[in-house]
Image (tube, rainbow, N blue to C red; front, side):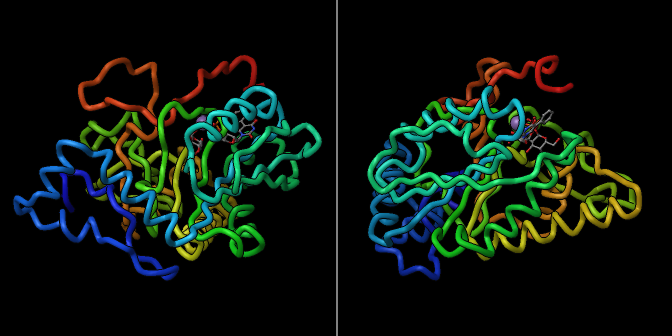
Length: 297
Ligand code: 2GW
Ligand code: MN
């Protein structure tokens, strides 16, 4: 797709026709005024995506889990910076999943934005906290979240927004290139390799390595994704297995079998510890520093 980066423009959805099909124009690798404009001024395409989303009156969900100490440590900053940068000007509904609803910070929210808190049980193992998200999300997408949102992003809480993250990121299914791994040769990517696991990729399989800290899409597509991952995890557990990178391994298997409609550049979920890279100009989300001794007990 166009621009060397297939990530611009809002695709057609069941929620209404697009006003302007930017992707259709730039897809053809022909010189055109739009293409020249898009190269010189990418913010114009971002602006068009914003207008399209407003015209379609989209509601965009953002789910995040904050269980145990992750609530105090990360949630307030995640939400405060989301207010500044996530889908500004759109209708947004945050879904916070926690075992302590009363401890969720009550932030002042911008117009058209609301926060819902859902109670979850606290798993004993952290691997289960992370993996159980797939099952919980599947249920939520089949309930109120699925009825009130058109598109949903599912994110880790241990990160914060640092730049505009708008409707140019929307598509039927959206995957995030992993900041540490996007330039690695395929044979080194840490896919699950045990053939008994539902998440296994055979040697020679796999293309990109995606980061489970951020994925998204339409409600219907995310229902399929979360069902697949939750089922795979359940099957592994029944066999006494656990995939190498937990839910992330199952997510990578899913996106190998069902290619994402949009792949986000590592700018959209960047790790500041990597340092400067020429291709990373404007990070949108940054990984928060981890203090393993504090949280991994
Ligand atoms: C997780 C690990 C160790 C100790 C605590 C937790 C933990 C995670 C927790 O105590 N409370 C909690 O709410 N979580 C949620 O799970 C939270 O939303 C967090 O962002 C998410 C994933 O855990 P996290 O961020 O510590 O894992 P990462 O940053 O090492 O993430 C990647 O790998 C994970 C699987 O190992 C997941 O696939 C994750 O999506 C990836 O980004
Ligand atoms: Mn994380």
